[in-house]
Amino acid sequence: GAVVSQHPSWVICKSGTSVKIECRSLDFQATTMFWYRQFPKQSLMLMATSNEGSKATYEQGVEKDKFLINHASLTLSTLTVTSAHPEDSSFYICSARGVTGLTGELFFGEGSRLTVL
Amino acid sequence: GQNIDQPTEMTATEGAIVQINCTYQTSGFNGLFWYQQHAGEAPTFLSYNVLDGLEEKGRFSSFLSRSKGYSYLLLKELQMKDSASYLCAVLRDNFNKFYFGSGTKLNVKP
Image 1 (cartoon, rainbow over the protein chains, first blue to last red):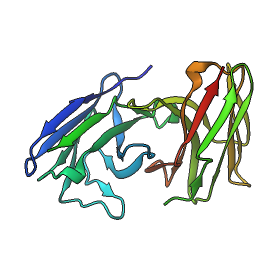
Image 2 (image 1 turned 90 degrees about the vertical axis):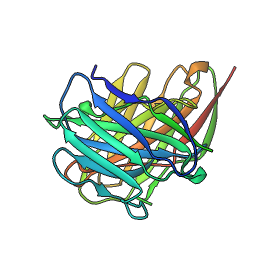
Image 3 (image 1 turned 60 degrees about the vertical axis):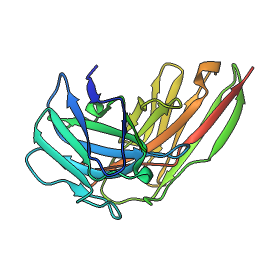
């Protein structure tokens, strides 16, 4: 099946620094990528929808200046957590949807666990 | 949230059948998905429904009623490894929004 690779899997950073998380579709072209955040024992909360070549659409309550999303190509989207603080510590997951629009092409990356000290 | 509701937790016995329900209220419906998630891991795809009816895939089946805003995931011949969280998710707005329910934690006992 289709593969979505997310990197890094784990990251620990100091408060105030920025962290970039990459999401790549390895064997298909992803027109749309979804970015989620998941706190312990909670479900996935949609942060933003990213379409290739256009600005991301953020969910209500998600700061676009803090969570910068770039979808520069059909195989790569990045999420940058700027000026990270301990409350940003979470599990961040991307999901990618293919060009043909077949819903079977919605696949998840492995997730990135961010810990801000 | 997005009005996607699931029971918080369920317990069932190994070898039994369990049904996990999901209700939703949404416009621009493009499909409903079920995912399995083990603690600390990313979700894995189980099933997808866009038309009313039952989709069967091995031990897992999923049902959808669009008019009722209702779906269920049916797990047969439960195994211990089926202990996990089960998430239903709704795709909507011309495939541009993909929202998850709160998840149902399933505990399978011997």
